[in-house]
Image (cartoon, rainbow, N blue to C red; front, side, top):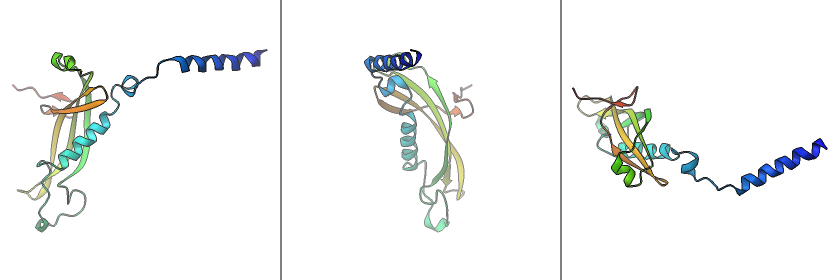
Length: 146
């Protein structure tokens, strides 16, 4: 008798799960897709003036020799509260991310540390990016002007 109850219970739970409404990716994880949005940001940085490619006569070899940047690291990510206007426009989730990398410096002809921060907002399944003020890469808190 006991062996019949366990499969019946499992079958009942499976049927109950099938009746529940399916969750969208955004409902299951509000930050789903953020990593991909950050990868797009990195690619856009590589293709921007922030990553000046070394001149051929500089003789740079190895990582960053063609792109002008190397060693990208997402140093911090924190949740941010959407502003009232953003919420009215449909923004559901907001995050602040800071990244650092080494960028080629044509003046000194060497790679130098560089960093940037960006706000990421999600409306529906779509992530958007906006520039953010400089942040402390350890805490992801914006620097305050004194």
